[in-house]
Image (cartoon, rainbow, N blue to C red; front, side):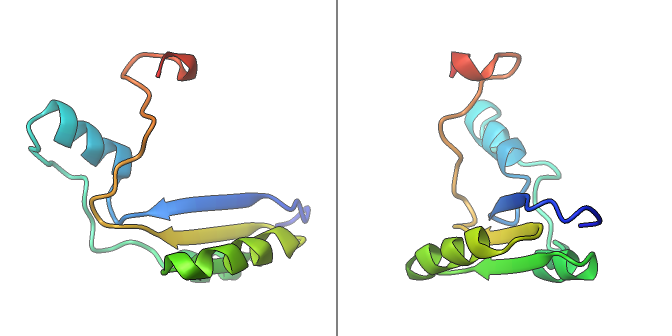
Length: 102
């Protein structure tokens, strides 16, 4: 924000530490430990508190317009994209592997 770099941070927000929960689900018999929190920050307010721009998208039909808004903003943006609580992230990088070993 200080240097007005137009970086964009796109959060796929399922209210979990998503990859941690996914690993626990797929590799540890769905035994979840410390991967869910009811105390997530309001990422839009967090962005605004630091002088950036915050966007929240909660419905798929809002996504195209919200992305256009994000692209048009000429300062840092945090984009809080709400996804299904149990949504997984694919492709997944196996533990200890490189991105080209998915």
